[in-house]
Each structure stands twice: as C-alpha cells, then as structure tokens.
Length: 162
Image 1 (cartoon, helix red, strand yellow):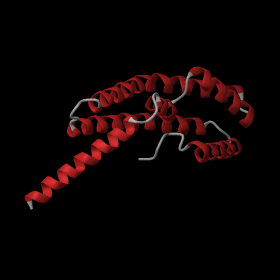
Image 2 (cartoon, rainbow, N blue to C red; image 1 turned 90 degrees about the vertical axis):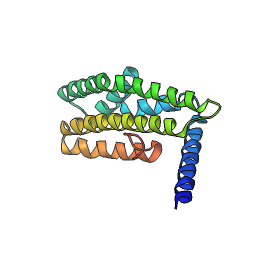
Image 3 (spheres, rainbow, N blue to C red; image 1 turned 90 degrees about the horizontal axis):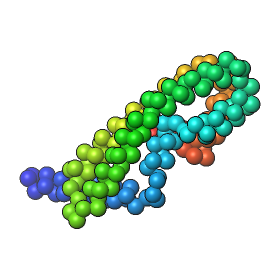
Image 4 (cartoon, one colour; image 1 turned 60 degrees about the vertical axis):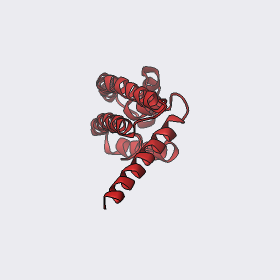
C-alpha cells in the first residue's frame, strides 16, 4: 500500500512538472495576454470596443457613460490583479528554469495563479452583468449574439472555463 502512495505521488509530481513545462513553452507574452483578455482591455482597445457597441447596439449617451464608468471600475480593480498574475507567471518560469524544479513549489504557485485568474474572471463577469443590466431587451439580444460569436472565434470572454 505504501508503494502505491509513493508511486501515485511521483506520478502526480511528474504530471505537474509536465503541465508546467508545457505552459512554459508557450509563446512569450501569452500569459499576460490571457490576463488582459480575461480581465479587460487597454484604454485604446476599450474605446474601439465601446465605439463598436455604441453603433451596433445604438447605445444612448447615458448607456455610453455607464459603460465607460463600468470599464474604469473594472480596470482599477483588475490592474493590480493582472500585475500579480504577471509576477506569478514570472515566478513559475523561474522555478521551471531550475536544474531540479520542485513540483510542490510549482504546484503551489499554479494554485495561487489559478486563484488570481478566478478573481479576474469574477470581475469580468460582474462587469458583463452590470453592463447587460443597462441594455434594452433588443440591445441585450444583439449583445448576446456578439458574445456568442466572439466565443466561437476566440473562446469565452472571461477566459477558459474552470
């Protein structure tokens, strides 16, 4: 029985290291981009997005003002989390570059990274809920179509599902 536990632990550690190495091998900037996508956009991108939504959904001036206010709130809350997420990825990369990576330490960092991602996703979902609440039924139906189209082409707006 003890041998099975040891083998299971070794196998789990090997899987964890393999997963972390696979993440490490991804293109530079991937992790930061995913954080940006999951939590929000640059000011320039958001303005283009708001301009598109204004035209496509025929937003009123009040709706536009609310959307900009909601984005500013999202950006203020998301920025420190995105910076934290970026630091977490750097820590994971540093750990992976060691001669003998510690699977437990990498696993702990991955869990912390996942928790930060969950916080960003929750912020994004709150933003989407609050923005959707200011739309008319017709606008909301069009907005849902845009979200579905985006998800088919790029994946979920809030990032990968957990």
